Image (cartoon, rainbow, N blue to C red; front, side):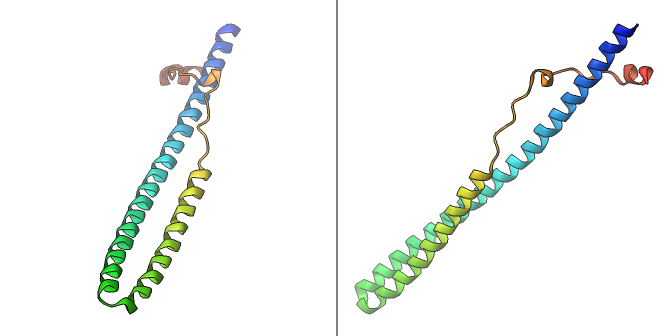
Length: 124
């Protein structure tokens, strides 16, 4: 009878470890999803900034072609946009560096089918 109790205790321990591992995986999934959404939003903002920079460059070139005195104003806006773009790039690098590697499951964390509630309640 002691052997059966020991086996049941080991199975409960394995089940608890498995459940803990699943909770960790779920939390990691949520954080990775949030990271991907943040990256997508960041990429969209960078694309908008690049499009704005290109549009301003086109307008500045058109102004320079018609009035050489206004070309200098376009360069200031490009410098500001370059600073904003660099700040976003630094932020993206910091977010990427903050990512932690995926924990590898140990030998006891391999898939263990959960014990039935009936079996858990009988031994309690």
